[in-house]
Length: 207
View 1 (cartoon, rainbow, N blue to C red):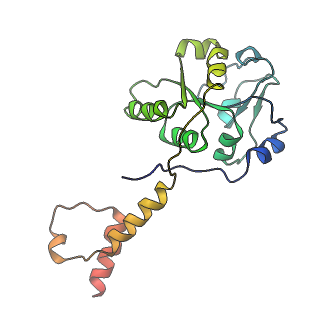
View 2 (cartoon, rainbow, N blue to C red):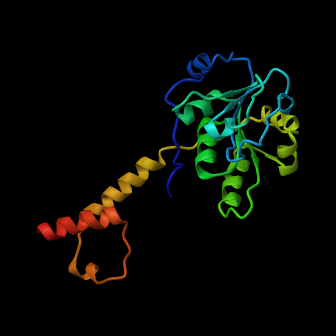
View 3 (cartoon, rainbow, N blue to C red):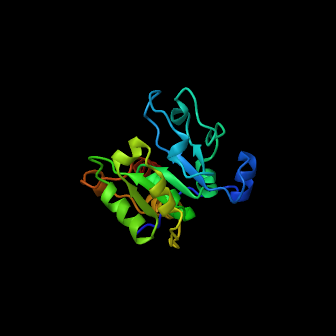
């Protein structure tokens, strides 16, 4: 088994909020739900009073005018820093989003994706760690966000597992590359990752 593979924040919550000009006591929603186009009009009424929504990408800012409670993230920002600075993430279920929410114990308010095979497994991972609220598509597109956001801010995510899955995978691949490589393996049906096969062929040919 491999631990969670997740990017983690490089800066503290306080440092990021200070750069954004957002007070510590202000509730901050990180919006990662791009792809709606210029016709998508965000409204101040979508948020509880006094809350701020940070738009993670340029595509999220495509509408002509943004309410003052919706602010674009700085260009070229490191997304895990924003996740850690937020009180919750509003977006779609995907491995990157789920792993970063779990790694920083930040709840994910999500809208179900149709025909996305990974969703049941990722949803279960969020559920067992008390890290999710599902919003219906109707309420998302109608702007009825407040009940879901207010529910999410009450959650206490409980993920305590390691997040060094990338290092573990790299070590396993390095070990595999060091294993003896025989002529019999050249004619076998064993499938190896491309970089590992190249490394082992180079070692074999140099003998």
